[in-house]
View (cartoon, rainbow over the protein chains, first blue to last red):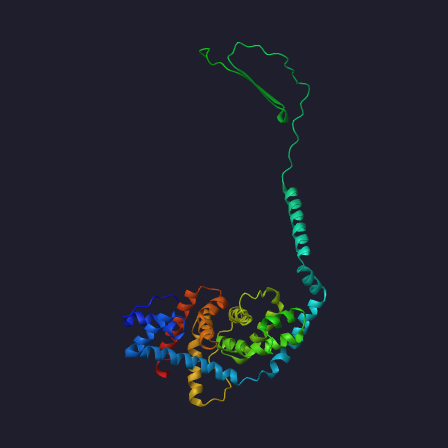
Length: 173
Length: 170
């Protein structure tokens, strides 16, 4: 941990760092500062010794209990299950697993997923209504005469719409 | 020359049974120790250790080698222990039974186990990975998928609580 060391650390400051000191998680300079303080300060030294004893007693309790366990039976007790898992790899699962590792298959699977998603999306989209049928109302404009200062013609074939815009500007209207 | 964990994992993926046996025998004690500390019962620790290795084998494809194999294995073991207690509703039992150590140290051992059993699974895992397995904060944070600062505070809290409960035998 990057905790800045100060030459004259107080007991309160050192106390907060004792866990990290015990676990060797401080930077070298801070480790030295805490070590120096602990060697000169009895209350802080006692706190550190308390943490060390706790570490020993927890480690020893579990360590002693594990030391008495006979692990000779451990592998045989799971071997059959391990065989079952590995057999499934060699079967269909194994072939799929092996195939799944090839980049080409991964790319093909992704492309297929994309196509399936696109089809599903397309099916869920509302149908686009057909454009209204225009029956015999077409007009052909050959000439357009006007005294307006400006005339504009806008025609949009997709919606069968034509707009003729005549400017009234300058006529006082 | 001893084969590395990475090499054994690669061979296991290719279906080499012996390679997985070597991995199991290399890590069984460590995994068992964490699970015994978490569950305080030899039968439960044995059962969950088996489950840990089988689960590791089943999801070996997910091991990317970013952390060490043992760190990855501890992560599985801690999750298996937490699940065991949550879903199977097994409260942590107090006392590590059937040991032949002297009466006095057995009594201390039972008190230590009782104190550890009162911690939350997260605090228990943190203290065991540190005090029993000697993992660094970085390694514990990988096992428990949390920040290093969280490991630091969990350890501090767990130690304070254990010290308070074991005051007269420390």
